Length: 481
Image 1 (cartoon, helix red, strand yellow):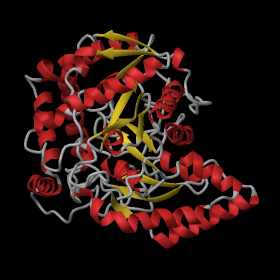
Image 2 (cartoon, one colour; image 1 turned 120 degrees about the vertical axis):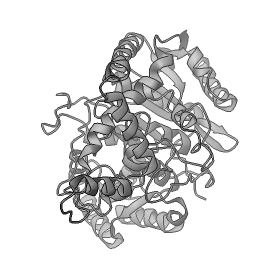
Image 3 (tube, one colour; image 1 turned 180 degrees about the horizontal axis):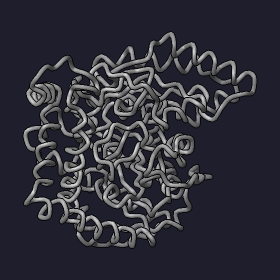
């Protein structure tokens, strides 16, 4: 398998003078020039001359011994995370050309430590999707097989990582939007504990569910990015007042690992996915890990519970996009309601409209108790159950019940589309951290394994991820094309 350098390897190479940030920037830019026209991983790109100037500044810092934690590392940022120097569209025509007047907290923190933001990555509109096909700027293709999807909604972040269009990336994860792309592109994605990473500057979809999340070519890369961007932020009311060390010292000791597998849930997977998953579990147990089978109370209701809460929050959050201020879509005179109806009708895509309509319905008088309040009660059951189980073990599942679908394959069946999130929504409903790392390949298509841990167990999760990488040999996987 072809490899590309990980963030950790690049930093070591910069430190020893084996390569430098300018050479790295040229390599990334060449990959973008070669693959981007087909893959469509970016919505907007920074001027390459500006990127090279910043890389030259990073090179001088390394030579002076003044390098910061991520000096010269090139990062792609999902286009629902605010940047004052590039448009932030959330993949929607209603925000086409919008440039925020501020940077998200995570962007500020990464740049403060020397990271170079090269562009804004493509996504399902307002992060609503699991395949990367609902962007107003065209679908993203999977670099491993250009006829297939890369997963969503952080489709561009996973795709550009896989073909070498950045060294690391940021996504957002509301119900698996970082972990599905990680599984489908042979990269690593972590959904942190709710509140560990500031949401300030994230265009919201589901406030109580989503987290800005790092993606990388290895678990250690994800740890290095997370260490820089996590921690308390007074600008975010959901931010936890903690700043833990999330960088593991090395791979976990297999004999210290205890895994719990929800058997009936895993049984929903297609055969190639199950085969890859259990093959990895066998390798872990062969090294000394222990495995139990568990059943999670309320798990069969997790997916409808998640979507009920998500669409309700989406309907509320997207009410602000009505065309007068954020941003303005032209003058209106007299008939305000006709104006916003036209603005939203033209500006929103089909999936966003579908979820807004569902959200308005579940929040409407006469149905709120039957749907929304009922969903919040089931959410508490699932949250308490997962908290109980993760006190004694990591919950292990496939990342997705299916291999990456072909473009267009899932679009005609919304229920099939939503079912792709069956395993990932558990972590969002519970607020717990979840890691996806590559587990192997099936018919040359990547597969991923998910581990869900207890609150603030990111360091242990990432150490487990490093162990899996040692066993599979998949680290820095390169879909060179």
